[in-house]
Length: 324
Image 1 (cartoon, rainbow, N blue to C red):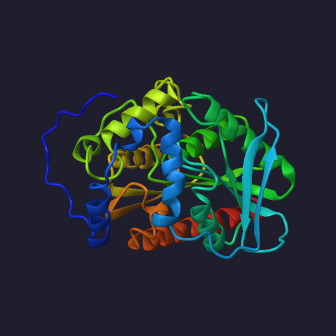
Image 2: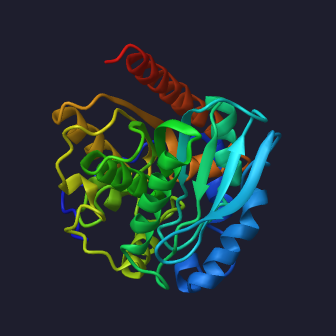
């Protein structure tokens, strides 16, 4: 990444629960994740889930299985608050973790909450992780899962979602299905604090480089492990043509080093004529949607985001029913 050289500005105030969490997190003993190596970092993330996030909670369907991919089986997990339903919109969810960490279990509480609040099935995808499987393994798996879901028969349309690195993959997948459509259309993209151009510096990258959970050093590690061509739109979708992309709901965290990537993507979509609902969760940090036990206010931020996404989905489905 390049480095930002613009003058520094006062940082925004943190919410009380965010400040308490960071006070605890920043004083934990031991090296940070990026100094441990991929396997140890993944293990720490899995072990931390029940300490920092809410339980998966009640669901009618919580089923893990695999789908066939050109590079081997791809694990997925289906969440649904209803025991059965007719074909309709289905959410395809890609987890965060810098393309190095995270899986369908670390993000199960978030996927389950999405299923409950949207009242839609959610298929969460366990794409291959770097550095063992560097770019473009992850976007290949995500596109495979999208095309499988579109052809499976349970979906009449797709809502593609992701948090952080998963937001990158959601955007890239939506772009691929715009250019080479699947059996059913993508009607919305729902992005939680997405990374959209990891090769370009923004003020937030400097302002929140340390002490705000996601750090500059960790981001640099993710980029090195992922080993992507940062000029390729499958790694940096901001650099592609955004005309004709599906409507987007985007939320950023105000105190997040990649905040400005989400802001820039929202603005670029608007310039391309794409409908965008943009929200910024003030006084909070990257990852709030998977830190809702440690940062209770994150539940309100997630609910506001999902309410906006639900409205966009309803509008898209109404337009489809009217043949528009």
